[in-house]
Each structure stands twice: as structure tokens, then as C-alpha cells.
Image (cartoon, rainbow, N blue to C red; front, side, top):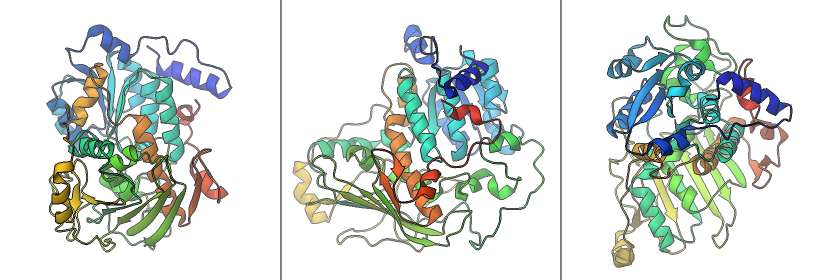
Length: 473
């Protein structure tokens, strides 16, 4: 096994321009799975076991394919982590993922990461370097550069299985969109309107903020320093913690990063969108330097791709920022594909989270996660009914798909090669939100052409001291 100490040594060599030696030839989790065979459980480490992590660990447990050998969380004494600790009493327990890999790395084949957005990168980077398969909640990372590094890491470790946790990418919407695109039902798309206008569940604060939050006493059981990871140090405040981190630029990706991967994933993959050439913040209500606007309208422009015409995605979030819908849209019904969050359904009063897709001849409406598309208006849908291709059923849900891929039985449907560029689209959108100005992007060089300051935001601030090792490949 390649230890974390070897990782640090190799990272130092890499930063000096030297090549790794012998890493790829070592027995890794993927080759081990093939040697042992598929008829067994995958030895898994869960990193982040409370709140969303508790939901995720239960979904993986339901597959019957996971053996949880280690549980890792920065607050093992909190009420929200006790359920997982009680459910898997034999799993080894750690507060720091680095210590976990040092001590029991040889027992781990795959990791599942359900920590805040900003902490995804170092965990995934180390796990992949050590030959561990990686499942990480969406979005992949908080910065464009971090996603780029993980995409590259996945390329250089082809035997490591990767999957981002946009679970609808293994459900009905995925297979329907693919079948309809291949059959020419979805074609010549020039515009997509996407929206998430539910209550902003993570905050309701005054956007006239002038400084970071004041420090508060750190809970006795919480390792706040490790929670902060590579981000520059913030004094602890309860409104940075739990679900609140989503709204801060330093920690989360706002409504766009939280929901975009559930709404735009299939369009991004099957319409071959890649990266936009322009991102324009059309409307930012309550813009400030610290947390996300109370509502946003962001325009993403994609160029012509092969025979497909240029396409514009317009994203709307915020309670009072509901987009117009086309004639014949019908009723926005409660979407059964949206999972419970914090104990209740997230449902808007006027328009369900989802999208409208405008092609040359047809218009479609769809929801979030695994929701299927409908042709609108109803008259057109009835006319097209006999022309629609048969849509295959999913052979596995997103969680089983990952574990089966770890066993060599399937291939993941949202590997970093696919989910990485999708996450980078959201990173560019967040940059436009934060800077409140248009970004002109070169898809080939992956640089911002019109704004040197915005170009620096692709990388973000340097990592905190002690965390540089993860960026030195």
C-alpha cells in the first residue's frame, strides 16, 4: 500500500518536476476486486456520517454490497453522528481521514465522501492516489482548478472507479434522455431554462454584511481545525456549520451547485455541452462578498458542437425569481423524485425545480433528479406518442452502480470524466455570481479571456499551511 507519508514524499518530488516511480504498478483496489471476484461485499470507508452522510450510508447499506470497515467524521460526539456509529459498531472510527488512511488504509477498497463541498478535494485526491475507489457527493469541488486536478487524477489512475453523487444520473431521466437524443426526438436544442425556486433552506440573513461572522466557542467534540481543511481559517460560528455552509462562498456552491447537478446533468452529457464560452450574471439580488445572492439569474452560452447549434442555459434561483414557462406547460405538480431534505420535501409554491428544453420542433419540460421529460403541449405529446423509442430500465441505482463498478461488473454513469466538466460549469457560474461581472471563457485553454482577476479565481486562494501537499501533482 502507498501510505500517506509516501504520498507527501511523491508530491514533493512531483512539485520539483520529477516523475512518480512504481505507483501505478502496485496492487490497487480495482485489481484486487477482480482478483477476489464480484460475489462479495466491497470494503468501504464512509467519510462524513451525519446529516446527508447518514442518508447516504443507509442507501449504500440497502444495496447489500457494502461492508463498512471505517467511519470518519470530525465530530464523533455529536448527536447527528450517533446513528451511524450505533448502526456499524464494528467499524473503526476516526476524526481525521489522513489518520484513517495511515492506520487502516490496507483494509479499505472504496471511500464514500459526504462532507461539505469545499472539503471534497483533499479527501478524493488522497484516496485516488492510494488506489481507492471514490464516490463523492455533488458538486465535485468548489473551484474550477480542483475539478481539473481530479479529472486529471482519474485519467492517470484508470483502474480507480469514480462516481459523483448526482443520483438521478442512474434513474429514468438518464435513460430516457439518452434514448430520445439517439432517436432524434431531442435535437437542435437552442435554449434551456433551469430553475430552483424553493425556499433557501440554509439561511435568511441580511445581505448588507460587512465582515465575517464573530467567533463562538467551539463544541467540545468538534475538531474544527480539521473541518476547515485547506480553506483559510475561519473562527467557528454555528452559522458556518451543518447545512449553513452551503450559502458561504468559502465553503459551498449555493443553489446552483446544490441543484444544478440534479437538473442539468443529462442535458450537459448528452448534448455534449462541455464548458461554456460565456457566463453572464443577468440578475443578482442581494449580492455581497460573503454569501450567495438571495436570487440569481445566470446565463451560460455554449458554442456550436458538431452539427448541434449554439445553446444558452438560463438558470433561475430565488423565491421571487420564477421564470416564465411556455404555452401549454400545464400544472407544476409535486415531484416524487425530489428526496426529503432536513425532514421535509423541498417544494415551491409556484414552480417545481426543473427545466424547459427548447428544440427546433419540440419543447420539453422536466423536473429534477430522476424525473422524466414530457413533450408539451399535450396535443404535441399525443401526436409524438407512437414515434417515441422504448426506454430501457436502469439495471442499478446510483449507489449500487458504484459498488458494482468497484467489483468490475458495471461502469459508473457519473465518473469524474463526465461529472467533472459539469461541476466546472457551476464553478464558472459561481465566479460570475461572486464577481458580479461577465466571464468570457476559452474552452481550449481553459482560461478567462476578458478578466485577469476572474482568471485567478479559477484556482482560488492558496491552500492553508499543512494542506499544500494535495495540490502538488
